[in-house]
Length: 328
Image 1 (cartoon, rainbow, N blue to C red):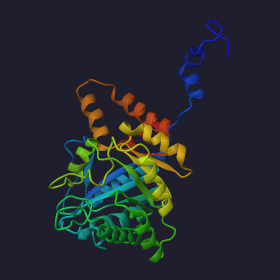
Image 2 (image 1 turned 120 degrees about the horizontal axis):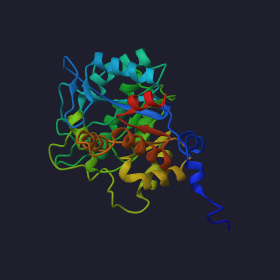
Image 3 (image 1 turned 135 degrees about the vertical axis):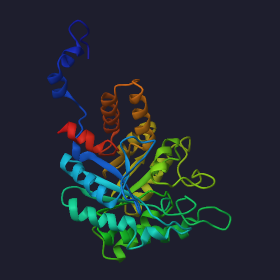
Image 4 (image 1 turned 90 degrees about the vertical axis):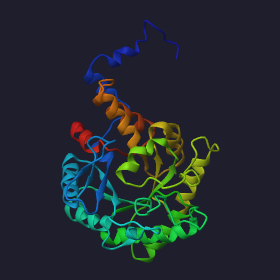
């Protein structure tokens, strides 16, 4: 390329809104958005989450209403997290056919399952009294292999309730293979697995732990979630392992602080790639906007465009319904 200013003027393609829209290289569509939702057993009305303005722990009835609103807006999917009334050391409610997640999934599939995709998070942290993502050894460590059995049981329970996508998030070694074998053995060969393949031990999860009531009662999750300063290529290794075990799509979580990882994953694989715009990302924008420090709507759209540009095919975001309405 030899032409220079004044013959070359890149601003020519930026002069008007219609011109910018016509040449845009990155676009958002409502169907690419997935709405994370929380349902809590034993409450009579939706409970607002203090650190996440506009997000609620839902009753089954209010969950159905919010799901209808998402479907009407054109959102592509929902992913459900549940908070049971009773927790124990093995997360018994996770695979209870009458557990809150299973009941809520059945509601949602009956109501909106033909309009959008109903997904379930498959982990134990919301269900255990200690808040960790698996079964503990006597020494207080998470027992990887014993936990796989619980994940498999929970995935089958969710599939029987009607879940259309199983999304294991616990970062146990071998979790995708264990879940795939359990689903296939129970006749659910058609149910896809969206693997949380690159999930980092992040401070951005703080508000979620209030929402899902799943903060660890001791220690942290650094021994099983990925280290943000970990070995180069670790995320890609995790992705390859999950795909070898039968994952149909993969996820990077969080999104904002790991856009470089998201790009590397997108360049590596030929399956759909999701990114989770997590609770801390949401809370920071809402808090700054409430103080008048940022233009809320512009920051929301800019952040989603950045995630999409980095390579995400699907974005899990608490703004899914709001943004879908604007896009339509």
